[in-house]
Amino acid sequence: MAGQRSVDHGGFAALARFAYRRRLLVVVVWLVLFAAGAALTPRLSHVLRGGGFSNPNSPSQKAAALIKTRLGQGSTSLVVVFKGTSLAATSAAFQTHEQRILAAVQASHVPGLTAIQSYATSGAAQLVSKDGKSAAAVLSFDTSALSIQQQVSGIRATLTRAARGSGLKPYLTGEPAVNADLSKASVKDLRRVEVVALPVALLALIVVFGTVVAAALPVVTGAMAVSVTLGGIYLLGHLTTMSIFCMNVATLLGLAVAIDYALFIVARFREHLHAGATVEEAVLQSATYAGRSVFFSGLGVVVGLVGLTFLPSALLRSIGVGGALVVFLSVAASLTFMPALLGLLGRRVDALRVVPLRPPHESRFWRSWTRTSLRRPWLVVVASVLVAAALAAPVSGLKQQMSSPTSLPASSESRQGADILASEFNQQALSPLSVLVTWGGGSQIDLSRAARLYAIGQTLMKTQGVASVLSPFTLPGMSNPITVVGLWPTFSKLLNEPTEVPDRAIRLTSGMGISALQVSQIKRLIESSVGRAAVLYRVTITNWGTAIGSVNYGLATAASGM
Image (cartoon, rainbow, N blue to C red; front, top):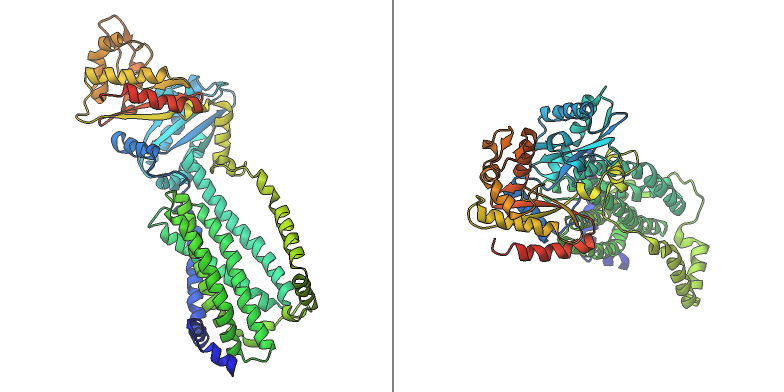
């Protein structure tokens, strides 16, 4: 047969012949991979990370890396929002309950937890809400964001137990908590896809093919490709940063292309069977010719997605990796698993007919539609463009934004906590701009270097758009250089050897006094702001557009000579 001889040429024919002749082995291998992927999918939330929007080579990320290495501070933290019923946040009873709950977290030995800052320990007014009924505490870590994300459930459980009977309701929020909730939401979305999308796809294919068995084959192939991909993403998550969003992108993209590609193979296989070919001939011809179309279609998609892996953003890179992987596996399943499965089923592919429709190639409707399109091509083109434009019209109102707590349902604890922070607290003061000043040479701060650091602090405070600056060199009462010189004998010890200064009141030679509580608070500020040849200024911004350029200019001038 001429047709048979044409099948015998090319790598696609060889692959199809191998899949058919080793069909039982091929199906078993894919089933094993499917089972492995299904077993690993529930663990995905433990290895996938949130964020990933920033460029690791940007100045802000380099500064964050320096803050971590020189000050021993991680780039992320958790925030516990305490909502009271009747107690004022500044009252002794409220703070006693708050400290007892936070002490329970500290006693649970959370990995990487280095410090807990609250109003009681720091006196920071920004940690109390505007109406005075809520308070916030910041949990600082010296470990990775993924490690913190994995501890969120345990910390929440500890907070809930410790808060019983206190009259306070704790809400755990912050970037790691939001990412943990996003991971759970993504897994729930996957389950929704399994419950809703797959049955809908199956019903649509039943209408197309008319039989349950033929309709089920593309759906099975899609589920196979997606499951194996998610298992692969789990393994990749241990080797490189993978975003939580790649899980949903891979699922939706995988189901779309895998069902589409498998549909080509099944449709062509049934056409050859109905034309009188044997099962083997039908498998070889469908996998060879339709398989070629599937391969080059998938290749084009993979090339486009691989381009995302060259971008610096971890989010886009991981989406590119996950998307390329699921398309590759969709093509592989269509070219190997599908021919093998069709070889096992044979003519039973037409079993369980439920819709008495003719095959698409025998349908009068499609023949008539094709003739009309060929007779009036421009009319069809214009009509198609208009329909596509109408369907795409909602994109003009699309609002783009970074992932945030608002992406979560209102019932999510991290979103509830973030909503309270946004509505009741001073967001600018809670999320200050971090300005890190570093220098070469020794890490000790002498009077000369202190004078320059003081000048930087004063420059920042006078910058347009800046509301306040928190640092050891902008403390209340230090409004002029003479004050710094007068305080220097005591201030020098606090700056360079804070652990050696006892927490007791200090009487200065000028007659001024610093209470024991103030000494403790200054020491905590220094410990979190002064590191190895580095000082951190926390700048509260009122107008970001005005302040950023002014801050950069002021720093360049004031820091000369550091």
